[in-house]
Image: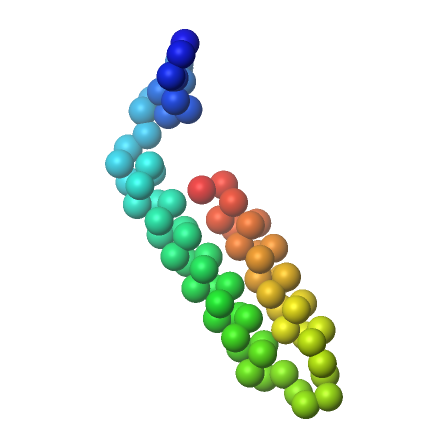
Length: 73
């Protein structure tokens, strides 16, 4: 039907307020905090001669971890 949302699909109960609003906001906050914390920690702990590769890898791995853990939300 026209205008049918995913939470209102036939045979599926309507999602609660927590699942629709609070859970995605908490996942976004946790994911952003983890991404920023790991990236900044890698940049601060970067040795003088190491270059740009370790912080870049840390950001990439943090992003992959966020997608793997929080992607379903």
